Length: 165
Image (cartoon, rainbow, N blue to C red; front, side, top):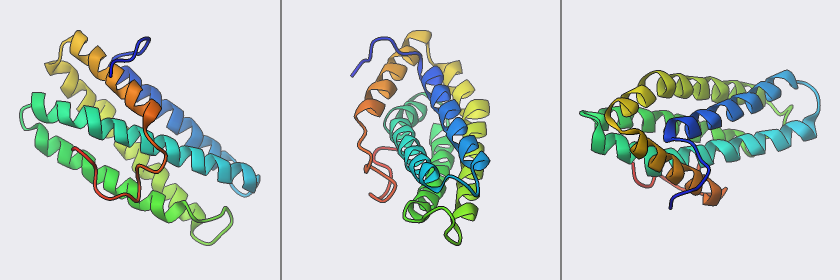
């Protein structure tokens, strides 16, 4: 499942982070206006969060468990963050902009996403990079890119626990 023209796993996942942060910023800036645009953007943001989560759970987390001493504890923390985001996405997805609770749920999802990004970029990625060769990181990046391409939109958040973490 190797993908040509991709970056290493850290580059691929940081690229996702920046894209998701951009969508969340656009949602924040459009509060109170453009309800149809916001509805579409919420759907696209959730789709990207789901694809990102699936890729992490199928590629990143197993690599952490295999390669990092006590990687299981680190993965367990990450999975807990995903569970929090999954709950928020399930609650947010059926709501319309302007509906009671929508803005609070969106703010909670944005905050949970920022916590996830910070933890990943400041702890998880450096930890993995310290124990993997550049070639291994590139191979993992190819797997992430391939999985994200084929991850179905409905593979999460309401399909149960993470598949392989």
